[in-house]
Image 1 (cartoon, helix red, strand yellow):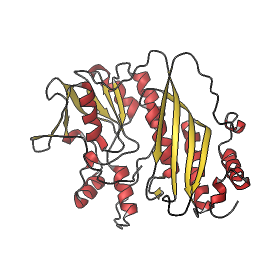
Image 2 (tube, one colour):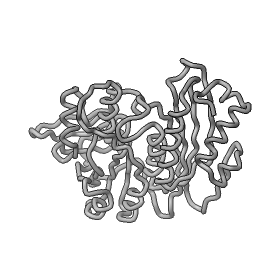
Image 3 (cartoon, one colour):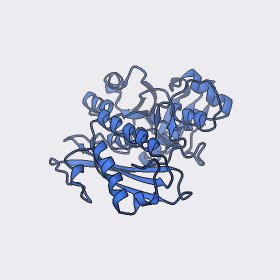
Image 4 (tube, one colour):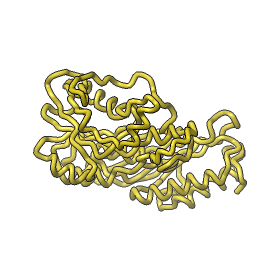
Length: 328
């Protein structure tokens, strides 16, 4: 292989076939090895979850992860939020001419390692190479398919009386990206929480059949996810600031830079809406860092109210403008 990607790697000829063969070797399995335009997948009777996403993070490598790990985890997590068990991924690259093959190797290896850790197979994909300056190094698109087992139904609408549980501290991904991108040289030690959630979600589904909604907290953070659920449910949500887990160094970093951690992106955190009786079992299934942060109410329809540490209340709207673009 050449040391850098050239336009010839995307023209359908020998070099492109070499690049396709390189990726086939990385992610080899029976379905992918057919090199067909579509993968043929057999599924049991029931339902499947299907999701797609694109990844444009800057920088490509950051404390706690990289664009490859992010692409796999992000789509695996989206499929998991329907209570599904992720099985298969597609993987498509848009690569800028001149991109170093050594960096592509690091990204491909990260994708391979993460897919193995998630127990998912990459079964189809695509490669496009564009002229230098037409993209920012590399973009990745993934799509994921998962099986929803019988009697599992996780929707988008919460119920009156539901409690909200989160699996750990917020705002780590966004702050890690910011520190790495801007080269702020803060010795914060903050790492992205980028992680796959499928096995935790499967534990949650076994622990409780009363989960009404699950949502991973990516762009827009906790506040935006809660606001979207309140609107979809036509109900109100009340949360308590003092109950929301956030690591001290992350909170301090947000304060210094003027960021609201409630709106900062995460890549390994999710929330569950569940009946009160199942809270203890669900917390054990999630993690020791999990916390109950609020509940669903008839009051404040379609709004999220935050009870602050000083006892006042404020509304949390959907994020209007991105505090930090190009983070996933």
